[in-house]
Every structure is written in structure tokens, then in C-alpha cells.
Image (cartoon, rainbow, N blue to C red; front, side):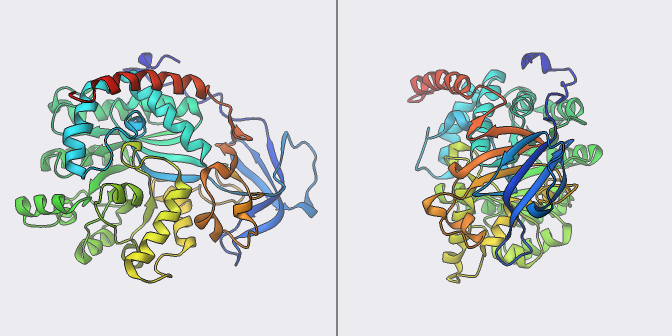
Length: 455
């Protein structure tokens, strides 16, 4: 598939995706309702992109099982859901570390993006991010960037489920040089990708400080008209809170509420500087929040009030943010950090439990992105599954799934199934040539390195 040929045309559908029927045997399976969080010695039959049946190995009858995977010594669990990423920014991993958010953005990231973000860059660097995510057990990602056609193509070819959101800002942007066309460009992207098999198109209004009130309202109207998710960075830093308060006499969340853009299809990213009133507004509106603790820590933005959001009934997901501010996309590490960080914040070891964080990274994350049939190992659900190798010193003994949060990492993922298709088997990605992708991105990085001192 030519990435350039997608522009202005209806994208190719994901016909190559489904394997013949697939059966997993001898597995522990994730079962959140049980005390230990798993059931022993089960099989799972998969076909047509969904889980067809599962049960005890004592009831297993081989029959016509298609491809057989033996998961002895492993756990089959829902694939992880990365609720926020800028995948193409894998090119800028480690480019400008140890800086506050605004100097990081204005002096390094924005200039680098202006110079290097092109369709080919987005395609190859998104594919690199897809490789990292698949290898660490992520099966679904909410991505937010520019040249979103190329990102959507990369995810499709990688066999990865994605909500691909096209960016909106009120100044010239990659692929949208005229800010007056910012919402129209997103509309064209959405119409090209609506109905695609693995990609859900969406709107990404960058933030309340890079989009005018008129732009925010128009972008949300577009999302409502197409019934797609609407993403926005919200209350990420204290400076943002002060900026909005000075201009609009209210918090960033109250500002969005007054504009009418908060509803059950709105996903607010970060939410670090939310107060009690903001949390009430979010709960009332049905809007969701995705927290990105490692990125917030690295940029010293602060800690989102996750426990308070959960207590108020706000839907919560977990994201990594992009590689430029994290610097990796391993959601196992993100779960560990999220759970421990909020214990320290409250000085309460039970403030945020491992099961809460697992929920954020699986079923809750899937549902806030619009996937009501994902995130659970059950018959009829989407077959987005990962096989985690428990035969590791750091996972022995394995008393329960809490240990996934506190001890597992992405390298423990043995195989990955997305939409019923075996995308990674025994640590080898089957859908594309990872070495080729790394070579392409390494060549781009050499140009970035030469230009970086002065842009």
C-alpha cells in the first residue's frame, strides 16, 4: 500500500486480518471477578475476530481447532489499551530531556516538528511506535497527531486497533498550513476512514491554549456530527490553569464546560490540575480522563487526582503519551508507576489498587474509547488478547494478577492477538518488517541530530 496514495481516497480495508480459527490451550485466563484474578487450565477458541468459546481443559474437545497455541505456563489476558499517544513522535525520543513542558515544547519540539514532520515521517515513525506497543502487549491505542492518514495506514498494516485522531490547532500545522482549514482537514480525514475495520477516526483539539473558543466548538460539532471521539489536552500544567483562568475567569475544565464540549464522547488527557469543582463537572458531563503519569512526572507537571476521579465516578484510562516525553510506550511500566505514585501522593497504600489500574489499562480504557465489546476475556468479545509468560523469576510465584502491575513488564509478553489475528508469536511480529522500520527511522534521526543544535 502506498501511503501517499491514501490522501484524498477511501482507505483500503483490512482484509488480510483474520487468521483461520485459532485455539489457545492450557492457559491461565484473566478473570477479574475471582480473588486471584485468573482461572487455571482453560482453552479459548477464536474465529471471525472474536472469542467464540472458552472453558476448562477438562471440557476441551480438539475437533477442527485451526491453529493451536499452547499457553502452558502463561496467562491469557485482554490486550492493553493505551489511551493517549503521539506515535509519530517516536522520532523525537530523548531529543530534549529534563526540561519543563513549555520550554520543551516551544524551544525544541515545535521547531523539530515544523522541520521534520512529513507524511513519510508519520508513517514510518508510527510504525515504529506500533512495533514497540505490540511487543509490550498493547493491542489498542488512541493516537493524536497530524498527517493522520499516514498514521492510520501504519496502524492498519501493523494489524493494530487504533483510534486515530487528527490534530486541530490555530496556527500552521504539518499538513494543514492554513489554520482556517484546520477543522475542514479533520472532517475530510474522518470521512475517508469511517467504517474502516481497525481504525476509528477522531478529532484531537490540541488544548484550550492552542485552540480558540470558536475552534473548540467547531471541532466538537464535527465530532458530534460524525459520532466519533473528541480528545483534548486538559489542565496539564499549573501554567495552563493560570493562563485560562486569567483570560476566562475559570478553570480549563469549567471553560470547556461553558463551551459545551464536555460529554460522554469527550476524552480529556492529563487532568493534572483539576480541582473538586472540575471533577464534579466531568462526572456530571460523562467526559472521561486519560492519565499519563510517567510523562507528567518527567515534565514535572504534577500528579492527576486519580483516586478522587475514580471516587467521583469519572471514567479513567491510562496512557503513555508520546515517546518524546516518556520515553517508552510500555503500559506495564506505566501501570506500576501509576499505582505506586498515587500511594505516595496520598500516603495511603490502598489509595489506588492494582485491580483499579488493570481496569484502566484494559476494559475501562477500551470503553472510554468506544469499544464496549473489548477488554474482557469472554465469549462474544473482540479477540484482542495477549499471552504473558509467567515462567520468569520475577513472576514466580504468581499468586494473582496484582503481580502484573508490580512485577511484569512488556518483555514478558509472548504473543499478541488483535481482531482474531496472530500479530506477534513468540516475540516475533508477523505483520511487518521491524528491522526495515528501525532502519528508516534511524536514517531520519541522523538528519534530526545534525539539525538539533540550532534548528
